[in-house]
Length: 259
Image (cartoon, rainbow, N blue to C red; front, side, top):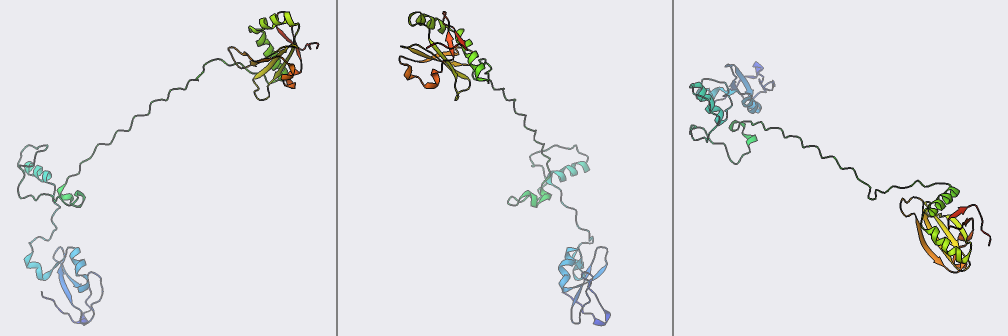
């Protein structure tokens, strides 16, 4: 490899890094595209090769053209271009058996992204958006029965409870017992723990009955929950007699029984 030394008084500079060549430092002459001669220091030879320059000493071994070859097309692309140049009809595809044996096969152990000259870009169709979810069915109440409005005033609750009691079949029971034991004592008290319920007690000296009246129930609002014989078995709050019964067993509020 031939290298040349230039005297330092020429003030030679490297055409790559533009640094002035020091005394005793060697340079090499490169040929740039177009045939221009370039001086390159030993530190910039790799950069000169990267720019496409060639050593002047190796110029005789290179082809006449200094242009870089165009990138290779894919196998099918080159084959289609060859058929167009020859005036043959284009083809959509094939097995690849008619391709020239001079075309090197793409490497199998290197991903396609690293060798784009062997592969052609294929545009994949966009995925269709997922269908919207079906509408959720409206939830239905487990018990579709109607619910009565519950009064908030204690006196109104008692009046409503006695009205429901008088519409039930229980007044006939009260009327039958009253014919034997006489007029009963009656107490109607709203429950504190369950605001929609009223407790009704109908009592005689030898017997008593306790009913539960649900103001919010549509069907069967009156239920017999307990009965006994001694008045002492009742809670004191249930012995505040504030109502009375008439001959047919119906209960009226606001009339105290004598006892």
